[in-house]
Length: 311
Image (cartoon, rainbow, N blue to C red):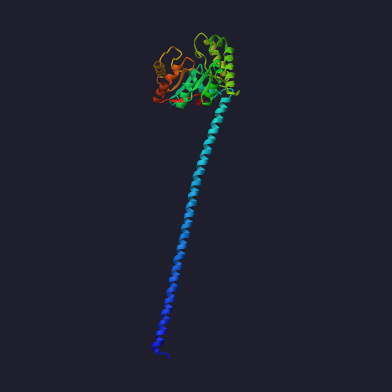
């Protein structure tokens, strides 16, 4: 028989058990909730990490794509430059605009510029040393070559061409009485040298289109023939070019100091300068003076150009 007290105890026990069960369930629910939240946060973190990684990869890909496009654009521009330069080299004649550019080479342009030009080469005694120095200094020059020298040194003609120098024509013989008999003789000397340059380069389409008269295009005993030849050459799209500064390396200067001072004295304060020098076999002093000449010109604000730069 249960007494009232016992019933109360039983009821209290049942209540306590219910509370324990409820608390247990609550704890379990909280634990599950915590676990679920933890898993959810972990998943979110993983997803965020994946997204960050994807964004990072996307950004890297975008940068790489931009670099690739820039590189392609750079290559394309370089190819176009090479093609344009090759087109100019393969032109049979200068255009009127190009002829004018050369004829007006001494005029002020708003920048100080200098054209290093070398006559009477190439030869193995001097030309390779000048080419080495120009390459070291990253300077492109203009070489007025003699056909009689070029035919024995085709590898130097090739090197001049491949290193970006302008190869121009300075006659075949350099013998005044042969060159200046008449206008036809001038053309014969010019054409003979052009053929030798083409053979040296293995390129029958190369045309220098630029002639330097031995002794200059004006004055002297043969001035009338020269004047007529200048016009005849121009009518055929061939320019002629003299100089407005020189080292006097073919006029008796015997020391490096003299050569350098002659350049300084003749450059004066000109804005656009064409310097006459020589790379004939006996002109080693020209090579020895060249570093000081280059330094002087740089110190005085000149930029170095060759004929390609004005075409």
